[in-house]
Image (cartoon, rainbow, N blue to C red; front, side, top):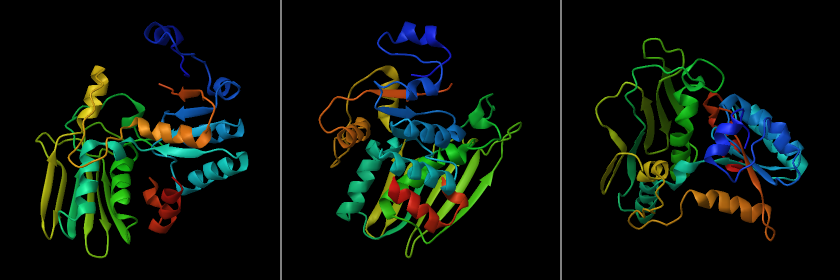
Length: 285
C-alpha cells in the first residue's frame, strides 16, 4: 500500500506493507501486480510506470481520461507482456445481475427504454478533488463510468450518444449533474446522475414489450462491506459471483500456478470521443 499516513494505517492493518511512493512498490520484486485507486488523472501515468516495471495492473475506473491515454496504457502492456485491465465493480451488483438475467431470458420482451440513475442529495460541496474542477473530476468521471459500463455490457455500443453535463450546486466548480442518452436502433438507454435529488428515484427502470422492471435502492453489498459483513446476496436467477471474482480472474490469468502478491496504490469515460473510438477501448477491457 502507498500512503503518507504509514503509522495510522499500520494501527488498523497489521499485515500490510506501507510504502511512501508508488515507485517503491513498482521496484519491489515481491510484488507481481498492483491495483491503482488514485485520483483519476493519475491512473494512466501510474499504470504505464507499473507496466514498465514489469507489474500487472488493475486500474480503478475510469481506466483513463481519454482514448489516447487508454491506448498508451494498452501499448505499454503489450510491450511489457503484462496485463492491464479496469475494475468495474458495478458489474457484480445484485440488481444489475438480476437485470442481465431478465433480459437474457426475454422476460421483458423487446426493450424500449432502460433508465439507470445514481442520484444523491448533497447540496454542500465538499473540499475534495472529486468535487472540484480538474482533470478527471466530477460526476461524469466518477459515476458516469459505472452507468455507461453497465449499458455497454447489456446492449453493446450505441449508434450515437447525447450528453448534457452541468454544474448545479452553489459554490461548485466540478460537474455535478449529467444526463446522457445512448441511442440504439430500436431502444434508448438513459444514464443519469444528480446531486440535488432529495426524493427517492428508481435505480433502474426498464420497459419492454412484455412488461417493466423497477428497482429502488443501491445494491446492499456495499453497505455490508462497510459494516464488515460477509453475507452474500444472490439475486433471483443470478450467479453467485461477487466482486472478488474480478481479482480472482486476474490472478488466474497472470499466474496460473504460483501464488501472487498484489499491492494497492492509493493516494488519499471517454465520452469526448466518437462511439467507435470508445468501442476499441471498451473491447480491450
